[in-house]
Amino acid sequence: MSSTPVAESAPTPVRPWKNWWATFGRPPRIMGLDVARALAILGMIGAHVGEAGGVVPFDVSTWGGLVHGRSSILFAVLAGVSIALMTGRSVPPAPEQMPQIRLRLLGRGAAIFLIGLCLELLNTPIAVILTVYGLLYIAVIPFLGWSVRRLLLASGALAVVAPPLLALVQTLLLYPMGPGLDLVLFGTYPITVWLALVLGGMAVGRTNPERLCSAIRILIIGVVLAVIGYGTAALAAASLGDAYEDDSPSSSSSSWIDDSDFPMGVPAEDMDLEGLVCDDYGDGYISCYPAGDHQYFEDGASIDEAFDDGFFIDGWGNYPGMLAENDLGGAMLSALVTADAHSGGTAEVLGSGGFALIVIGLCLLLSRPLRWVLLPVAALGSMPLTAYSLHVMSFFVFAGPSGSLHSNAVWGISALALLVLATLWAIFLRRGPLERLVGWCADTMAGRVG
Image (cartoon, rainbow, N blue to C red; front, side, top):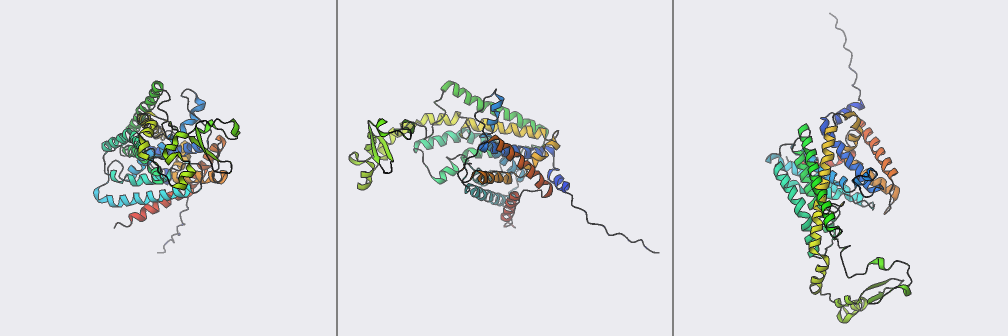
């Protein structure tokens, strides 16, 4: 009996939409986390190039200013959520899994840190968050096995204690400086404060955020924290006025002369130099300071004379007066009740941290009914590291080293371009290129455990 020949099956064509579905076929509310990441990225772009100023609660035209400070905080909270999802979701990892997970986070953090250094080399005015972001991946390693309750307690304690404690240390030591201190303690992103946000995000990630009840709970908690944080700052402003707002070394009282008293280009004969001692450094540059400051040098010598003869500054002798000028109590109070963007104050951590939870909760809840509408936004949020790096590099290309760029039109064009590029990449290639690189670094580190 003759057999019917079986036609050779043709290779299955690769359909781009399958890549799309593989990327976004997960539960809709988990996709909501990608949407929240995209909003964080778009918000940081607005903070860097937008023209929005301060926010007036009942003036809708000023609400664009919400991106300042809050976008990076949303990014940090979502980092904690991602870490929780990568390390067991609702169940902390088992002890036997810990060595591999720690190495994965170490590799991931080191890669992100190096990418951040590369972006800083471009010398843009953007305070690149990725260096601290990379360190945070390493800093959370001791907390991986903690329960939700312990994570929340640690997050709350850091939020309340770290800002005034940092202000205490800064004031007592007369505002120390150094590259290490600027990176982890006293810079734009103090790691003690931002660790509180990441730990809070880890607690969120451990509560099964894809569930409806969890999303609602996240939203409610966010509202409560925002009211507490911003309410505290508003009450402090109403009761204390401007006294608490800024106690940084750049604005604290000092014996040095305010530059505004001597605007550039004023003829010497029109300047009142009574009670001042001036040193002429040539080329028209003169430094003036109160005569009383000569106590630092022997026999009231000028700075030039002191350097020629050798000099000694009695730091301890002048310490009580300088400490009094820095206002220790005011600095600590300001750290507690300030909610200004990037102030690192307790009120900012609570208020903007609550705002981040509100955004996350809304994205989780809206990701199901608006699933298809939000897919391009989720595409962008699925590759946040790539999108953030592209933004910084494009800023460098258009503005140049040390250049400045502020335009809402540029903000809109940048957002649209990133949405289109991320969508096309997700359809055809799925994972973002820098996300692949970071994942490879994590896998390589973890491969050492066998």
